[in-house]
Image (cartoon, rainbow, N blue to C red):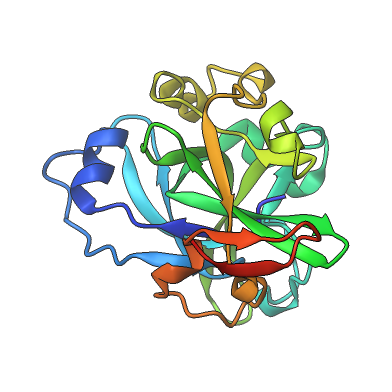
Amino acid sequence: MCGRFTYTLTWQETVKLYRLPLDAQPRDTQPRYNVCPTTTIDTVIGRSPRALVPMRWGIIPTWWSKPSGEMKLGTFNAPVETIREKPMFRRAFQRTRCLIPVSGYYEWHDTTDGKQPYYFTRRDGAPITIAGLWDEWRGRQAGETIRSCAMIITDANQFVGELHDRMPVILEPGQFEAWLTGAADIELLKPAANNVLQCWPVSRRVNSSRAMDDDSSLMEAVAIGASGGVQQLV
């Protein structure tokens, strides 16, 4: 699963990587180091032109009939095995796909001393682009409209599998267009190659959703003992 990530992309990096219109209204993007589900995140949608759109992380399907606050299900991850059949994701898979840019993401490994978080990022220093789905929900009573999204997850590759059995679907720039337009089906949604990511252990302060969003030390490496316990910063 992927339940926490970092986001440090600048507007210029985003425009270049996702080929946004050069005359698009610039966004003042602030670094975030503890992005949690149900908060607002940036997504890339559209075919030509593409656009950077803020959305709720945790999809609310268009058919949801209750108030948005009653969406208690964990819909921030969409398992690749169910996106074509499960009502929560099926319509979005067929009609509304997105790209979710992240700088890196946290994952937890079970140890005898408790859950130890690790930080995953690309070895080449580029942003991670995760395949996503989005939908638009309109509340009848409050008259609100919410755009929301989910990350697609798949089985872990061998590298990630040393720590966790699942990972987000990572797309390369040459795959962006096929995913967004629907030209590609489920064949793109595979584990990344073993040499794409790197990782290191980080402070267990990440375990708390109350850790500050602007605390860059959350992704700094720590040393851990044989039992998995943190010893010191490195």
